[in-house]
Image (cartoon, rainbow, N blue to C red; front, side, top):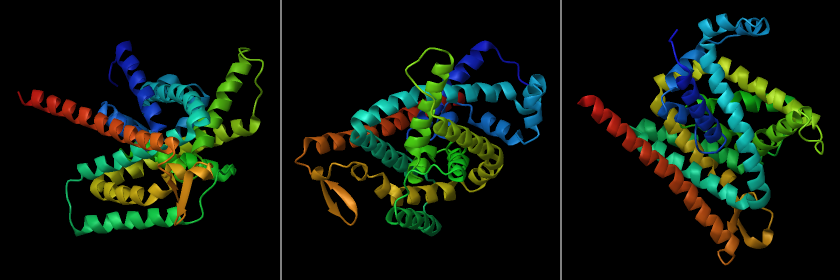
Length: 328
């Protein structure tokens, strides 16, 4: 076990808050942030150690044993950062969705588009197999896009599945868990409404707010989603880390095709109800460029695109400087 001071854990907490915040933005992978900020490898190796034997240790409060066998303090700090980020980000996103829904979806669309361009840029080998893998992902994405849209679903098993599958975004750098939740129709329910409901319940319990009321249905959804996420981390971490280690290029190629095929679902104007602002063609809502709202939305797509590409350029430059320093 490595000896670490409080400064290390404070920096880790800040990095985890950043990872959790980014993980709520579709198109940006929390796992990628962990990789870029230097704690991805240890996080994955620690997650691989976790199994269901840890549960009785937690109930018996065997803190020292958890820390020794599972790198418990390290994982606890990461979990704390994610929880903090979820409460703070969900309130902001809730406000933005209520007031500027079209603009938020537009920024998300730009972010997802940019993340796919980055994955393409990072591909090391282009051959016939790459083409076949990308086309396979594209076909699956298109099949999902042109099938009946998945609407918000509060079914307990489906909520558990959403939690189970969404954690893959933290394990596979480049894959966005929030993007998967949008495709499953439960992004707003699980990452905004439910988290805000839990936040309100905590305020009520502390006596801070008396005008709010408990929403027990949403609290149940938070619990089931959390259990699904924890189960996903335990059961998927070994499989997905093996997959990304052994077949990284193939996984990225499939994600590229899948995201491009799914862009129809994420098209911002498919999420608004102002029919007067739209033209319709092949089931896709097309913006009328004579409307100022639509022009601003296109600007937000560009902002989302440029923001993610700029962050990627900054990280690449920083990594080049780090490599050059090691050579001298």
